[in-house]
Image (cartoon, rainbow, N blue to C red; front, top):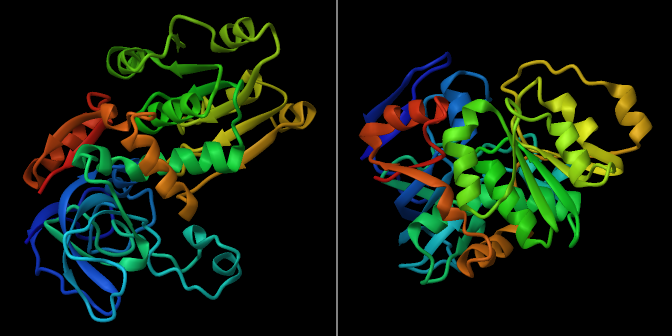
Length: 344
């Protein structure tokens, strides 16, 4: 089968290869991939700035159909349309696993960087990590369940957005736009989105198409003054940092109100960040760092997307076969694409 493989350590070293079709082991199913989303972590792997174990097939935002059952499977059925949690090889024994945090188990090896992922024609996967999707859900919708589940985990479950909150999202990339939609679905009274001049043509335009009106281009407007004006000088209840930009991250403390919350999602790609620590102390803010998804977020996310409350599929801008991977990766890096899908 054709697969997109990170072949060795270092920048680059990604190519389409012919690899053997996998065979399901005990407790696994074989899935025919319908689509696999490109995540920021895939871009980081391309540039050697995210942990990975090569050679490895990229991609963890996959969806598809169960076509074969391995030994000892007891819940999955042939023909199931599924999405999958990327929490493979969590040990199940450590403190984190035993307290329900398998997503950050130190032995976890997720598809796309730790084990072979979904940018291929087939994948074999533990049935315990699968979630069925409704027949009414399109493959496009299913392919963005995983990134949307991150937003649901981070904003609803960890940070605790509530109805009436004023939310600021910093960074209007795919995860930023998904987070903005989740905040709106959770009852935020207003969601302001901050971007750069480079975001204006595609990302902020898409935000406007999605119905967001409080859009701040830092090349034209002071974002701190704008947010203070919109909140009568108080500041935002919640600031969600999705940009991962070292110059933008310290600004979060100027955007949030005293006793407010900062939800951290964006990764910097290992770039250092200088933080005005005393400002954080004197504002007495809660800062929530986040990575990956909780079990409880998945079915909630599937419902939000399937019912149209969070139309996540609208962030998809590109759908390409595996052979065109480089075109889509480059477009994402050049801010010429939002969410790209690899479609085998």
